[in-house]
Length: 414
Image 1 (cartoon, rainbow, N blue to C red):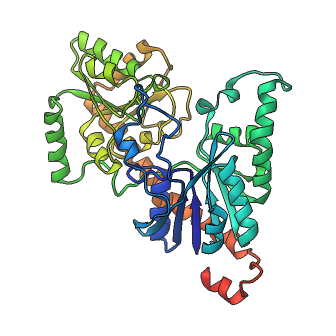
Image 2: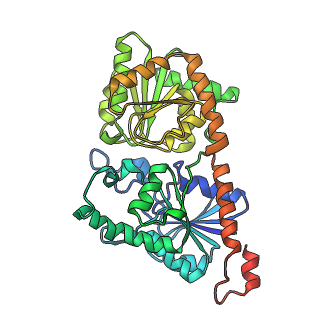
Image 3: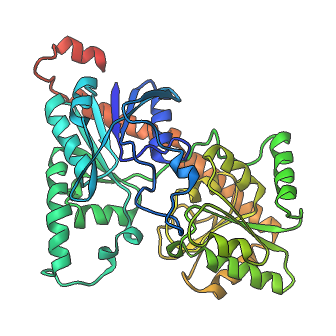
């Protein structure tokens, strides 16, 4: 089976769907092709000084290039812009040349889904779409506006109507959380019957608890290099270090715990406008973005993973490495139930109380072990890819061969 995964950017050194899912689909025997623009990930987000972090800029691959990575092929095409949003030049032609059985675009509305829907009409293959936008990333979903407000009308025109056109041609829409599913059918025009909750996954080849003597020794070495003692309780936070993520809530609580004589430390990995303040915070260390293959060692060197606000796929990665999670009570909870806590977002006292509970090593280790098991059972890319393949195979068997492709050839490519 040939699969084309269409995405706005390709973050080659980051542990996102665009790198994890193709790897495991390829392991299942699929001929996978990732098609993306030449834009860097986070291209809409400047750092605090207006400059894109070097790690992010280094993710960019040259337009027109093709590269085989982890058993699948990456096609980087030129970016076009229309009404302030990017599209992929030559996307329809590239999909027509590849003639995939399945085209899967990671968004539900916008230029790329519209282009992918057009490609589906050309190739005759099956179209799948997705939505990763949750309530925290879509303020309109949290606002009580009248139905005939200007903002709702604009959303209907620019998101709902194009999304409905795409949905009519799609088989399913994979939404990463319950609230992302609601955004998809309420605001992005996806037919409700086509919405499927399908959580993101973890590359368990990379993210797992310390197993070997070498990994346990690496934990000790990293803690020494960072200036942490063996008895310190390290709270790690990774991702964009910006105000909406509230990293300074964590650094402030770490400072208060240390003021009470407790050996807590903060470790922040990422870049953004908050980084300088975090570097200067009592008991805290801040490092720049790094490849996901390196990040696993830092999770294994830590003791608790904390995200004071907003979702992050890194929560799953940290849980896979055996860390208990502490997250906001305003986000989905499947990944933290039974292996961590949610706190009242924006309430430092509530966060402090939870971290105090997790000062007990036995309690931390019990929660961390439960989380690592959960990831393997429910959130690994291996399991996610198997589920996607079942859906793709069911859809593909119902395919009517495209005009111009002999039925025998269509069958052989499946």
